[in-house]
Image (cartoon, rainbow, N blue to C red; front, side, top):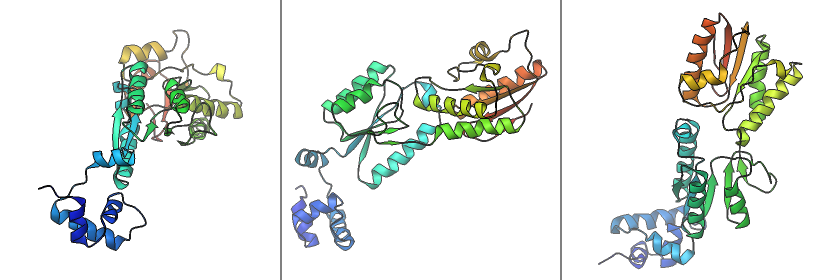
Length: 291
């Protein structure tokens, strides 16, 4: 015979409604009562039927996570595993589960979000990216569906709840570091140009150059999507012209660790060939190479 909430209430000497509140981790219930009820649940082997509770409370206690893409470029980025770990811990502490939705294309990602919302699969959504003219964000706003963005929104900043670091200041400080080393030809290697993160970092980079009186037109144009695509792709984007051999090439990296290390190795070999020097500053790692 299945154990019911009434059996737990009888053993713990509380009302069934109290057991229900303990399961929901209601702050109005004292810790002493919670401990007694949970001990009774463990002794009887009682497990709450969360599906039934979701129907009764009209809450799934599930949060949807939307990644920007299912491609390897993002899964190589240590940023996302770190964020996922924090989200998992926070969800666990509050008795929530996470539902990850991904897709290979923008249409697939959008369709997954629509299914989560219209299918009543989640209570809210966390967008793990922020980009320009995002139709997923527009859809969520039009539906007045609860959502949070990791990253600064491109529009409606005052209306949208988001969590972000100051990418403009961070890029500005990274560029200042190279300027203080005496470099003037400072390139910028960014990610997807539709991501607000990339635009903010570019803005900080340009701000530092302007303050130092460095003409950006005299710098190496490196506004490219940078990821692990092999030496041929890198050479196509960053190989100096035959008639130009810079004495100093300073490169500020604003992408993820795996790609940065791959680029650094390639850049060192390239600069050695041209008998040039470089300081390669990793955006988030604060280290530099001197070949």
